[in-house]
Length: 439
Ligand SMILES: C[S@@+](CC[C@H](N)C(=O)[O-])C[C@H]1O[C@@H](n2cnc3c(N)ncnc32)[C@H](O)[C@@H]1O
Image 1 (cartoon, protein in one colour):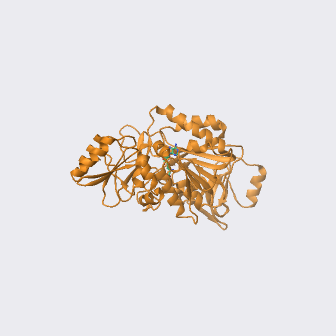
Image 2 (spheres, rainbow, N blue to C red):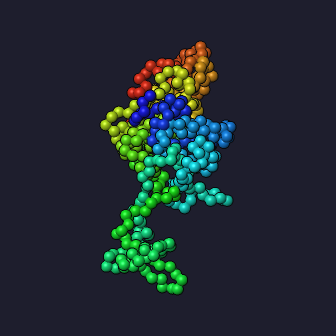
Image 3 (cartoon, rainbow, N blue to C red):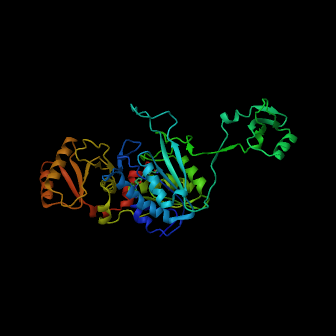
């Protein structure tokens, strides 16, 4: 199994089981949050491609069981010096913490990082009887007793610098209280002319702490308010619904890995983690169940890499395609035909996409033996949008469907019935890349 600079397409559980024990230095995961939402990707030019679902029929226990299987594997493949960051939010963070404590051990928990997504005080959605929700949580665990750690720090800000408001011949200083001290320390400070005598009886000594002596940096704590969610016009924005900012991943990767270490993101989306890992000279592996996401991240990483990026596990046969979630199947079929996905979700009259040229309608059915009634409804949809050509894609069609197509032809409506195995014969790579040209 290839363990360096590769994208795996498919359910991460299946791939993770193939990884050897203790092979990864850092894991960052940003899984579905149990949000009960369906996420959609809206591209810059108004096209839309449906992405992943975060709905759980069996409620929170179903979600946690699903996550637990994956976290179990992630813990197994993490090196003893490795770190694990799980991105989540209020929907399930407390359940996930309990589950991770069980797998890693309560004492291996390091931090709950509070990431405030926007600098504004609250979301634009007004909620009448609760506080606006404006942060995500990132649970940070380690695997062993010693782990890679480069403490993140930031330069003093203006507010902090204002504290150094006194000046003498050695420069600017601030007054720092001596909480506990030995007689030796007191003598030493006195001899250096740094001791500040208490002005009131019973008060404590202070000493002069010079600005020049400090590194000019303060340690970053577990509340991160200096990294904003990607704004709609940011250069790094790709239109992926849950895309995280590169600055967030940069902080995590720099803190918990060194050059040439191996970073894994098993829910890689549009590839923020692997793009940053590549830029910081780390090795990386990205996994995502969505073929569309895998191609998107491949294009993203290749922009900054001299070498081509390999995707392993893209659908190559009927079984792979049958196993895809419905929207991914739809994306794949329309992409293979070189089309674009219909931006309307409601009232789309069963039209799932349009061909690249002439925008003829396309309908996709992830089933066998499509009957006459489907063709009939498609004819109505074609007439409503005033198109005389269109395609229906499915695994197979009934005799009645072909008869209906012949009848439609006599009315001037040309419908092509395309089976999925026919589509597989096309060069899928080449044609569907059209969909991603604008990245
Ligand atoms: C919240 S998004 C990740 C976004 C990512 N952090 C970024 O910056 O683009 C979650 C991703 O997990 C993927 N996903 C969901 N279930 C999966 C599974 N079982 N295996 C692999 N990927 C999965 C979805 O396709 C989606 O792209």
